Length: 201
Image (cartoon, rainbow, N blue to C red; front, top):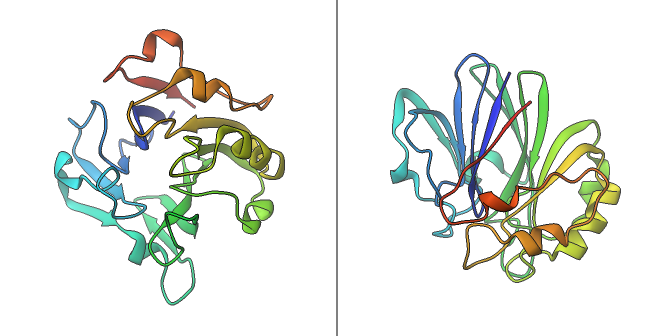
């Protein structure tokens, strides 16, 4: 069963049932001790692209914006049984030309990592997702209230608010202002800097 480790801010790690290690937007928290098969960098802002924190396996791959958005299209990559398809991501601080999200399928679980974004119309076409990780800081991304509205148009079993604050790894109050009957939140004792949040699917 795959494991999700939320490291804080926009950073998280996924480990598949077969031991495939995936890091998304390395920057925050702990848990960079496992060598990576895949690193996804949704855009090149310094709070998302600290790939030096990660040790790549000999055949490890770093997927950047330009790998997931090519000539105006969002290709599908298959790496070690993991399917990754780029998706749009955009707002006043991030253009589609420099930022992506993605939909990943691993161990039969489909996860949407929104990257840094606000609402965009293509969200309404996302179907049969298991998890959607949405930014909610309201400064560089959509607010928790806008993310709550997005949760009404995205077809996902669960929603996880992340990227809650530009100054903290996790702001529990902002996270809990994201409202969805299918929301998953970190526990209060996991609020402090550097604390990890683990979830098995």
